[in-house]
Length: 465
Image 1 (spheres, rainbow, N blue to C red):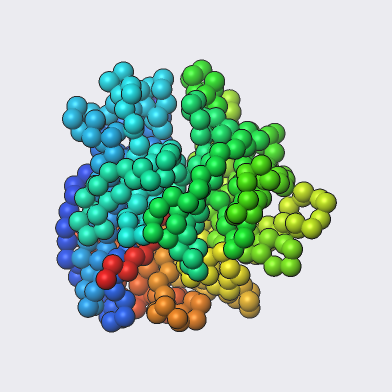
Image 2: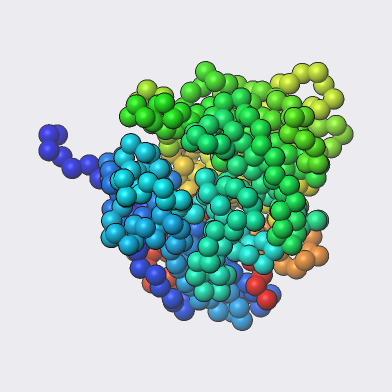
């Protein structure tokens, strides 16, 4: 209807910002295991101010906010703080939004020219004693793990780092990458780097991808790294012409670059498959001259338009296995289905990352609605093929589940699963704790929040003692 006001869905419901910074002691129902001690950190977009162009605001473009759930002695406390990036500080000084959606220069205020920017809104992890808030295009932002105060950009990385480093549990090394590297934004340049267990930089190398792509995550095994360049493409020319900076272009095809972790980037071998998109792999490993990657695969990239600006198709991901035969002359990727329900945010026991795994957990949509409705938490036993579900009701939705081992030497999968659930009817959130291998019996403890925690992206557990 003419004159109808359309509210951007990324600014409404549980996507809407919660701009207060709070400290709460949470009421606990059930019993938190005495062995569960540490902190669950979660992060997500939370715009400090009304966006400059609310109608075209994208969820991915909001300022980062970190949420900490501190667990000890059967009790839970909660704290949340903004990630005070240079962007956040400049806009806070002026009392309004200055940057265009996802940094689009066509919609950015001249006052923001020359500012480092950054949102630090996508992932939060603990490595070498540092709590790092990460996003696609800037240095990691270091934060105090106890107070969540912003310390500043960690420039040890000598450049930007994207949101999904992988920590090798055996060596403590952290492998990472960056995309759109170079003097021009939305370029095909990429970097591959390694940080030592003590947080010092071991190496960083640059290379050119087949084309500019949003490379949200990558895959790492004991001896190899894999870079998925999939046709959610970046284009500065498109952005300067008023069209979407990132868009779906299936005609570009899909490529995955494979190289040894200790090799030069000039040795990357590019494998290929049909047009598809992957935000998140579950895990990867190698065996008998082959590399296996379990990934959440979309037929088309969700949440983004087509290159001409038209709306993209609805899509949801399914768990599949990609096989790369390193001894074959063929560069084709073999694909095998692993599950038949929609899902996202897959996780394994972090102690088996880069190794062959048995157990995986993810947020699921058993109705297969193709809308990424996270109405359940799933556990898949890849040895038996059996799946367990904990299904939510009443419109409740879950975050990414995060596994916590019972002890350092416990068998794979022996531990607890944590997830934050939005209670739709009450418009607030709860922290749920499960026995990881028995989701069906429901949470063994629930910590009640007095308000909601907005939908976010990723979380990780840290032992802070």
